[in-house]
Image (cartoon, rainbow, N blue to C red):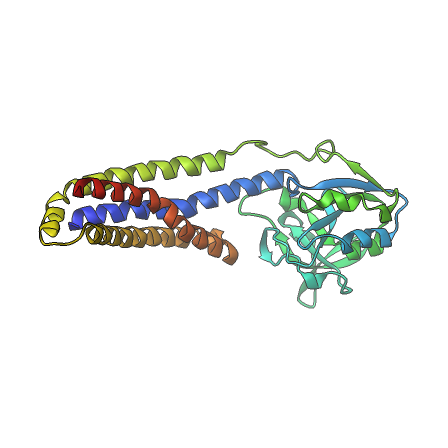
Length: 323
């Protein structure tokens, strides 16, 4: 493959590799903003009120939740108790850490606070504490994203500690999978639960029902693939002479095709990986370690998606020409 045409192919697939992590990051940001607009509840969240309940009723719900489910107990609009079942929460923090399994039912009083509450903290023995109705909670992290958001005003404490100082009756949100509602219908809970429409409670998402991020991703990737097909066509038109020579030398059609595919795939895969690595390095300050791993894994998995149409076109063209 001539160096100029080879460099052109590598550059186009480098652009595809660069675009994938960037667009994934944009989609992730959009989804984060939508979720923040819903007070950080997911689309599967179920809201309910409890009446004539006690701590054991709430603990029954906590004990029968699925792994990864989150139960919120509202103290006021910006203050809530949080319980994450057998897992580490993925709340966005700009300092410290989020809730983890060891923070619950361990006699701890811990809190995540928004950045606007930092000046209200107290420092004792080098640790930051936040007072909630006279009780001090150790600050383990500061909620927030790069830009100002609703998260900056929140105060979240571990739910088991909340139940020690606040009554169990009130407003709760169970945020989990599609089957979360079944737990609230458990006959063991009696009549203490009354489900509520979460949107009627004022929780509504921005851009509801839109798939803007996915549309951007598909359109950009489609444009880049069209560029790749055009450049491949240009290169193939210049391969007629080498193909004829190989065939005259007795090389089989299969081996000719295999050599072309091998060189093409190696060139494009290398360009794709370089582009992906460049994008991840560019965005590394906005990515957590898990985000970097996710973006890199997604990029590697998308290599066949990006190259497969081009290889299919290449195979069909070569077979047609060799006939």
